[in-house]
Amino acid sequence: MGQDSRLPVAPPADRVELTRVGARPPLATYLRDVWRRREFAFALARYRIEAENRQNRLGLAWVVLKPLLNAGLYGSIFGILLASGRPDHFVEFLIIGVFVFEFFATSFTSGAKSITANTALVQSLSFPRMTLPLAVVLQRFLQFVPMLAIMLVVVGAFGHTISWTWLLLVPLVLLLLGFNTGLALVTARLTVHVRDLTNLLPFLTRITFYTAGIFYSIEERFADEPVVLRIADAVPIHEFLSLARAILLDGPLYEIRPEYWLYATAWTVGMLVVGSVFFWAAEERYGRTD
Image 1 (cartoon, rainbow, N blue to C red):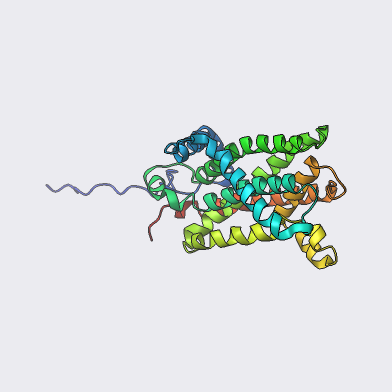
Image 2: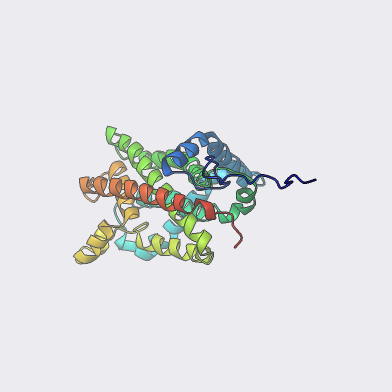
């Protein structure tokens, strides 16, 4: 009875090299962990594509039908409104614009909600949260691939010469994929901190749609306004659209501008680096209710 019955005090966690549950690992370790879960991200992307179209009679056909219907609608409306102001090869011009913008816009809006829309998953399982926005962008990329094939068929059907330059679409699409990924990482964290941003996303995408030159040529429309043209040169989505059209279409309006490749590459690398670090820095905050 005279012996001290108190339990021994455990040493501090840092002395025995214990890791706090949910702690943010170093960036390099974190990215390696994300890469190890690439199959999970791919499976999640495929499952979401199937889930989105399971209730539809036409199923996955809507992946291509939706942007085609949008292109037809915009072509009918703006083709009439613009009349003589339409750019050369208007149908192909519009198809490329709508399809490429669809990939960008859906990656942006869905990626922004990738954490807030999966709160239960984030709170119940331990995994690098970056996997969620990556899975969303991968989903949109998989949906973009058949759209890309349809786009090539349409361009070829309208008599444009099939040439080796069409192979430049591969690096261009990869650059756009990287840019969309970085942008999704940035917006995914921002919407966690400020939920009201999700209500602004439709307005942001709509403004971008009407100002990026989807159904009109910025170079022709603002030929006498060099300030506007310089601003347009610095807008990433305009650079991607211009490169895609220059690769696929014939004519003096569609000449590949080498500086756009430099700009697009810089935007992609910068957005990926900033997005990765920005998202990783708040890893411990995702899933919190406070």
